[in-house]
Length: 237
Ligand SMILES: Nc1ncnc2c1ncn2[C@@H]1O[C@H](COP(=O)(O)OP(=O)(O)OP(=O)(O)O)[C@@H](O)[C@H]1O
Ligand SMILES: [Mg+2]
Image 1 (cartoon, rainbow, N blue to C red):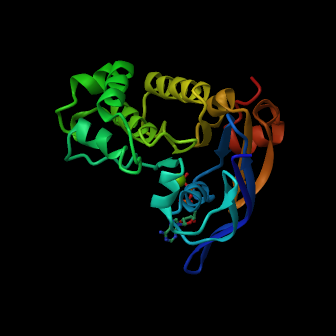
Image 2: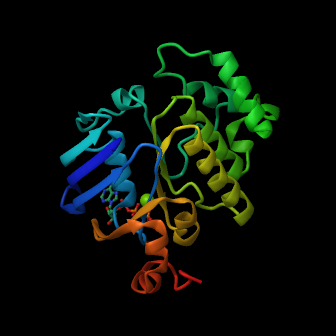
């Protein structure tokens, strides 16, 4: 396992957002974290990324993570693409992409930028334009491309499809599949449960800061109880 989370608890003052959560991600796996609004998905990935205090254990690549050590985690290959993307809108596309290299001791920045532009021609065309001028989907591509520049072993993606049209969502999900082929492991937070379960290997369903179901993605998708509660009644169709 590249990631093992055991008995994770995270609170915001009196609000107990995550209450004893266990999950794991294997090498090269795409693992989905699904559930309704406010169940603790973002809190979980932020704690894993090192952006929040927590209790319990988060083991990544053979070592226990210390709370609030996001920069050290990035240097060890643990990268988060946050909810809302976290790009700097008043900087250029290329400036955003260059930030992705900050934790890398040595990187062929020019070469990797060219590879990114070959993969995402739109980012190449707009490299000197402001990030806010990109469409929502293009901004999501930019955020993921930037995270890839950190050479992550484990990529945490928080609702990458949020606000995207179906075509762009498909493109983003295809990209996640490609990244896994390149050797990345992925923890994917999503509300579009049905589509997510199509690309994920395994899934965890959250409610009230706890895992209420887990298993192979196909089994979760076919579970009639979960279909009603979490998948909008369309599962297994
Ligand atoms: N900074 C904060 N201060 C206080 N409470 C918070 C804070 N951030 C989140 N919460 C609360 O913690 C709980 C979990 O929130 P979280 O953002 O993790 O949910 P989520 O599953 O990501 O939801 P969504 O699908 O809407 O993004 C919610 O009850 C939320 O109101
Ligand atoms: Mg969230």
